[in-house]
Length: 369
Ligand code: F6P
Image (cartoon, rainbow, N blue to C red; front, side, top):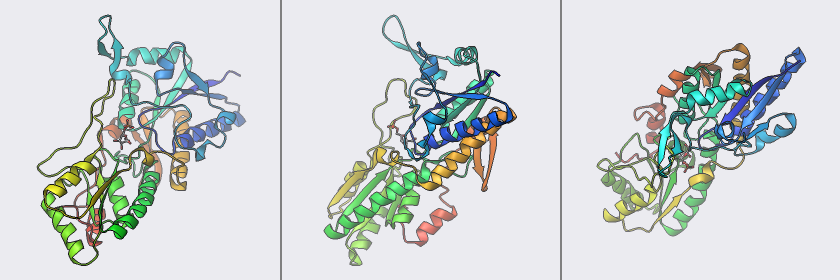
């Protein structure tokens, strides 16, 4: 009996747990053969580039190819956050690039290759592509991924808890040096415009100060908190700052853009903050650590392996049910799905008045306000 073909893609920044989702899809698909329904799962290399390229770059994802990959970081089918098919940078005769909508062409391409459906694993940008493919007539299921945890439709995205664990381990090491040298240690974490990684790490690590994008900080208040700590005899301070944080009268610290990339590159706020503190008269030695991609790498912790594996199984079951145009989510402790259109419109930011921020304040953590 001929097999149905399913395409899987991973898009955007990599994230611990991507491989566990892929394995979950493949394992669940294999169970169907017990019922006489055969499915072939294929991976498109580097998001949709693999199916867009000539020659095609697709790999067969079967039991052998996916065996044991749930414990591995990254993605065996690679990823990219460039070359969005909704605005694909196509080189013109004069050497310039023009953004072209390749979605209708991509749908034809997938269908002509015999793909019944596609599971797209990615964050907000990737799920906007999922929605565009769905509107253009391609049966699509989305799976939410990002260490930033900034998708409102799901309680957690996989990868987030691993990033928090990695950041907390790094924080613990920095406390040692802050203490020994009476220093102010600033640790910058990722998260784009959401402060979740910073907030969780500050609580888990026991930071004195936590600066997040949702609460623009007042540098004088930050300085006051640092002085209190030195005056009460503790003599050292640990700060966690989210890469998207900024001062009340300031703006985010961002780098250069890159060709074919939608989002601005954040990073370096630890140095901005350090300068601001020095200008405001902080005399203690200040050291900056930008944790960067260490937060995205390495093996997923058990929580993320479970979340990702269940998301994979659930995604394939949505394919079986023909529930296309949906994204798998964990909502109120239940694995379910929501329309992609809702998923991409609904962001998850830290609530400045929420219970977690209040609890952090109760622990003595200052948000610089
Ligand atoms: O969205 C995940 C993320 O790691 C963000 O936290 C960060 O701002 C961004 O990706 C970094 O992207 P890149 O790996 O392209 O520098």
